[in-house]
Image (cartoon, rainbow, N blue to C red; front, side, top):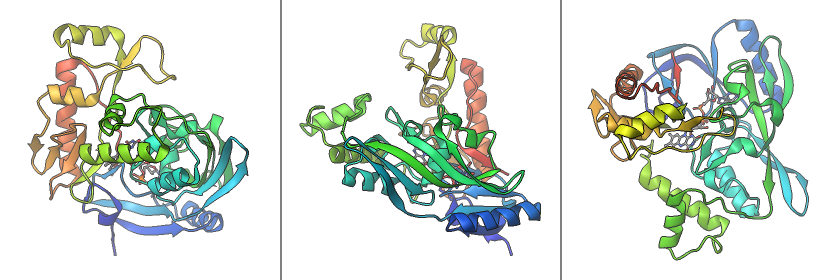
Length: 343
Ligand SMILES: Cc1cc2nc3c(=O)[nH]c(=O)nc-3n(C[C@H](O)[C@H](O)[C@H](O)COP(=O)(O)OP(=O)(O)OC[C@H]3O[C@@H](n4cnc5c(N)ncnc54)[C@H](O)[C@@H]3O)c2cc1C
């Protein structure tokens, strides 16, 4: 009997799979890994499905979910803490808990959907912050080539813009169980984004006065205004990554479009490159607020593609392909999906 994945993806796609299995501890994860290794069936680790697109109506394999909970303080000094978190914890619950405890550094990552395990896989980021900066190590279990528990220290995690070793060399061979984070007891707000500073200013709060609780609240407000709620309109957040292009290409585009926004690149990028917001490119191609069949482009944030009710995975892909085609034609820039296609 196929298992429905409708409640396991924020796009609200009606897909099915062969079966669904959960692990609640490292021991259970080891047992499940052994079953997966022996079965020779396809399998896919999943969190809340907020960065996945089930392209085919049926995934011929098992979906595997980490249900390990818990937040333990492992080390504490006057200045910082190191916490070990079950990968099945909801990410935003962890941010809320840490702010309440006076453990700082995650405020700017408030309200990002999904679970802690996936956050470490994706290197989630927002408003100038990335989780990889805080990760100490990631614990998990290898399924292949042989089943064994392992700890990957931060330096080996290869964190970069929305990327990590778990999305490349260890993709679908390693199941995350726990994530360790180092957090500060001294609150230093990261206010590099204008939207945050002006939101605070609107409340009469200066950068010197802002508390972690207020920063978190303001970020939640901004996100709730800007992004469609997946409970109401199926989506997976930013569908494409922001392209990193040679400065010369950006200059040639700017000659025609003086309003072209450009940002400095993440530290792991070669010199001479800049980041361009994919949303700007999509808007300039006329896609903002448009639809292709039952798949749409959000009218407020064109980087978000939506299921307008009855879309299949193939409908969303058709829209994504059309956008990629137009951006390539107009700007000679390839857009790459941030969302993972599952077929
Ligand atoms: C409205 C909205 C807003 C968003 N905003 C942001 C944002 O601001 N910044 C940002 O970075 N992202 C954002 N996202 C994307 C998404 O929230 C993140 O990528 C999140 O980390 C995905 O978590 P998840 O639990 O849903 O993972 P899933 O989508 O289920 O999985 C993501 C990937 O992680 C792998 N994975 C999951 N769990 C495990 C595990 N235990 N072991 C091994 N691999 C695993 C999966 O195989 C998959 O490759 C947004 C999404 C939505 C819907």
